[in-house]
Figure 1 (cartoon, rainbow, N blue to C red):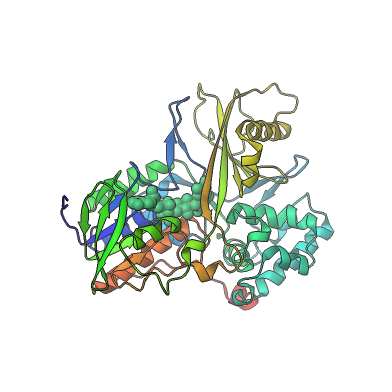
Figure 2: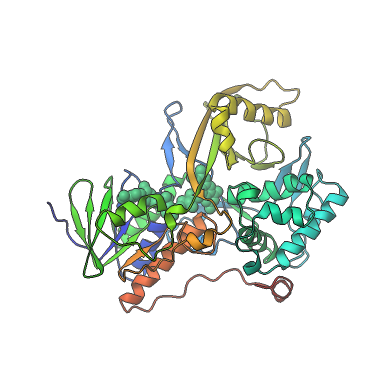
Amino acid sequence: MKTLDQPRIVIVGGGLAGLAAAVRLTQHGVPCRVVEVRPSLGGRASSFLDGATGNTLDNCQHVAMGCCTYFLQFIETVGAAGCFRRETELNFIGPTGETSRFTASPLPAPFHLLPALGRLKWLTRREQLELGRGLSALLRTPTERLRGVQLSGWLTAHRQSARVQSGFWHLVLVSALSETLDRIDAAYARKVLLDGFARHRSGWEVLIPTTSLSELSDRYAASWLRQHGSIFKCGVGVEAVHLAGGIARYLTTRTGESISADEFIITVPPYRLRSLLESAGCDLTGWPRFDQLETAPIASVHLWFDQPLTNLPHAVLVDRLGQWMFNRSWGAPASADGWYCQVVISASRDVEALGSEATVTRVANELLAIWGAGRSIQLIRGRVVVERRAVLSVTPGVDALRPDQQTPIANLHLAGDWTRTGWPGTMESAVRSGYLAAHRVLARLCRTPAPLPADLPIPRLSRWLFPE
Ligand SMILES: Cc1cc2nc3c(=O)[nH]c(=O)nc-3n(C[C@H](O)[C@H](O)[C@H](O)COP(=O)(O)OP(=O)(O)OC[C@H]3O[C@@H](n4cnc5c(N)ncnc54)[C@H](O)[C@@H]3O)c2cc1C
């Protein structure tokens, strides 16, 4: 068995959680070794080479929101903040093709978006009032009373009609949480609406990467880490974490290497973690049952048309198969490959039954019905990428299954968007978990860490109206 040079800190997994943990530790003068099974970094937020065009495409368009303060600090630290553009106006396309512009009014939070809700043209005035009552009831209920409650049942009990459920609740929450309303814990619905829409004027703004996801990991995060002394070992799968005397001692890899360290941060998905720990005899009695966590699929439909369909940079699609259209040609010079857009289908369980070809046809036809009427626009090519285990399902009661970053083993820490952060499985949750795990390590090394990023400040009125 070959023994590698020993850094003090080993991070297993080079997704956002692993990279964030490494950045946080490296910032405090503690460089790390990151071991990643895939040849490249980024995990679920990554890109692939499209054989037909030779272009690097994202597995799926990722977006962050103004309330994602840890993620924003992370990209700032690695010099990638300039690779995002901030949308302060969203374009909703109603069922009959009408556009409603969603933007903040000059009113103070939490009322800044009320006029925008009143402009959702596909809801009647009565439905908008009904929605207002539902939103107010949810936001005014403390989170603890919603935890474990199924959202669809809660909405029905609060007289939210099927029309309002599909025209608002489904539209917003399926995009944000990638789950259907019957599989969402009402506490997470409140979190999205409170942090994103009610608490702060800029919480809802959408940040869209202007570069590929793999560039964010490789060109920015990994370069920054290398410059500051951290190292990467890609294409190496960790097989087991070995303990002795109640603490973690070393890892073994699938290629027979062993890697010792003082502190270990494991960021693999929950369905990989059990085997990693148990194969070397770790007793998981007393740990949360993380292997019962469920995941939700997301499909992205990549489409190339022979001419531009729309000048909009993005659109939120109401009552369509996909929820968001991202114009990936926006601001770019015309390309010989055609005009390129991505349509994201969250909670995409239906797509598998439908099949790729039918999905491409249906989504392309939906876009053509909105923007192609009276024009002879041709679809050149379409491609569907389905990530079956895209994100954590925030099913009712999910919090009991999400483990803390600190484990019963003193020098073994967990990170990953699925660990306990209070956030749904997002880039923000991944970065938070990485920072929290890094702080556990720093505490054990007796280093005083810099303060964690602050959440957006909550105006007094919001705090009073919507208690924790
Ligand atoms: C299709 C799709 C769309 C999404 N859209 C959004 C969005 O718009 N906004 C948003 O905020 N979030 C979005 N997400 C979620 C976001 O991508 C994740 O929350 C985030 O990337 C998770 O990072 P992570 O590091 O926790 O996990 P991962 O990215 O899963 O990282 C874990 C890493 O561990 C590695 N690994 C696994 N096993 C081993 C092993 N044995 N040895 C070594 N390495 C191992 C994996 O290869 C991986 O790189 C989306 C996800 C998908 C899939």
